[in-house]
Image 1 (tube, each protein chain N blue to C red):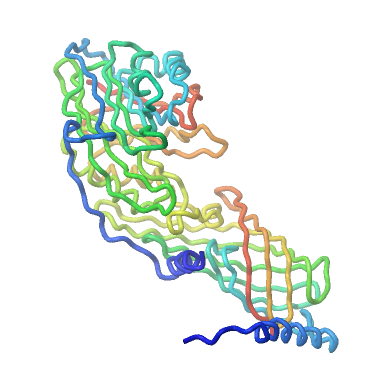
Image 2: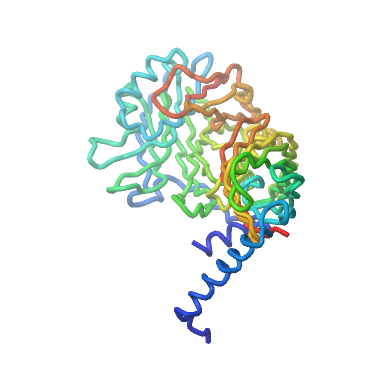
Length: 299
Length: 166
């Protein structure tokens, strides 16, 4: 305890920086084995391309009640007509009949395609990870291990899930991410950087970027006093960073995306080359601690 | 090799400062009037993780001072300057209820460690109100609960100060 306190104080006085983390490249989903092997279901049939393609990112907070989640999605004017869902905090529990990604896809429409990519194992052989559900066929399903940061408490492997959806013959590349919470902004960029740099060309990047406004001491303690007086908005800075990488930020002006007493813009969608024509936050969907965020693009 | 701490030595360590403090009280040399200078390090508190501060007792019930903190965390530099007044509405010369309030100036500077992003800066002016306990002889101890407020909201926090009074 004394050592931890000394480390915390020393960190504050001298600064603590990590060496630049190593990058991993995209790997095909078939190259993973064991509990963290992704689960993929895709059909060959591609429906006709819509006039506008609706893409949604939604942190489903473990989706403990899949039927309620499906009802909320189908009952939402914004989500009911979505074509692709990028989902974070999806889970698979061996005591349940299938992964919650598959259960959700089936509850929405048994013809839907889906991927579930486990990020980590959780208690009793369950897994926790990212998912993507699509009306359109999936190809080039890949996973990237994102740079790891030791959070001292509840550290976790983080991944990016890359999927190409076939919109009636036109490929659309999508990347879904969920970044660590208790990292500072430079580390957040370092964690995201390989997924951006190693995904050239037209791209939709979405997910829970966890752009919270705090400075974290030792990736453990949020420095609340300074934040109440002066704050650097991480969501705005992430928009700026990605705009420098050639992205547009169609969800930048939508405000908070959390369904909590304290609101933050944690979830975003960015487009490179692809043109977004509309965007919104489905605040009527309250089954999670996040609200879904959506954009419409021209396929 | 370290010498063992005997029970006698331990007893002396505890008893001698207490006896000395008792003598001070008997001689009437304690308290803010006779020891108006306070120099301290605050853990957590106004600076977030730590700050160093000084204050001077203008009256038995009033002191004024300031603390300063500088932190560097993951490329982020945080400077917090906190001038304040201390009010002692209840209590004696040694133990007292402490009410501290004052403005706070915070400057954040975030250096980029990633190509393609220029970094960011922010400065804000807010305030803090702290309520707690002060123990003052030569040794100074303060333990407070703090509310910091500014344009981004209100934050609860705690702080413990250890220092000297002269």
